[in-house]
Image (tube, rainbow, N blue to C red):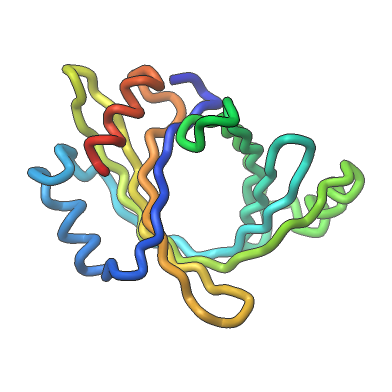
Length: 172
């Protein structure tokens, strides 16, 4: 897979507890993967429409990351282009928002979320791949919390997008 490509699956996970998620990820018989890293991250994501793509601005004060996302085809929601532009800490959110306004990006919505993220390594058809699993809670505008589970084979993996899709089908 190339530097600007990602394959992912995402599910509503209202019935999944954080403890159950931890047990599942750590059970290598179920996932066929070994845990490499774990972290908990909280912050806000603001989404914008720009042309055929979507831009996400992830900020935790200074710096942050601007991510362009676009489906590779209308028929696939799994395989897409994803390009990250990380900012130095000196870049302020108001500067990023100003650029997006000048580009005429349409603000879609903003979410606050807490993510429980595992980086894992596995083998599919003799090829190694790395997958990231994230259980995350999103606070909605009404104050309710929705939970989702996402598994992705990210950019710079040595496997092909086709093998990445096969690997994710094993997770599902």
